[in-house]
Length: 88
Image 1 (spheres, rainbow, N blue to C red):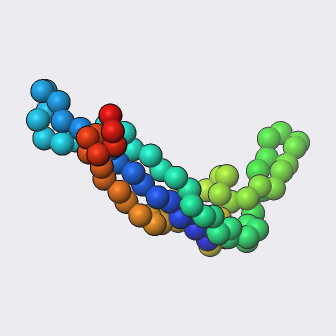
Image 2: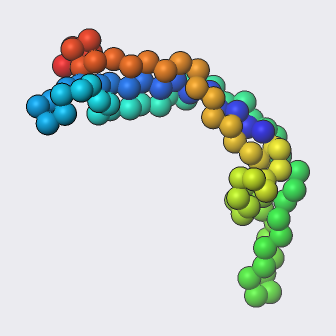
């Protein structure tokens, strides 16, 4: 399985319409990617006389993908900052 490690930063603010702090900007930064390797269950597709073999991640839903094609996103750090702390 491919593992993607991300850092998430939420920037919140308050406004007259919504006095409670709420996020208005969310950024995901990819920190590391650990590849799962080649597909272990390739799929053959046909269109007329033409056939092609593709990785199962391009054709199957996530629950039917092989272990190498499945992608897992792991949150490394989650940071929440208010607009005043950011300097805006």
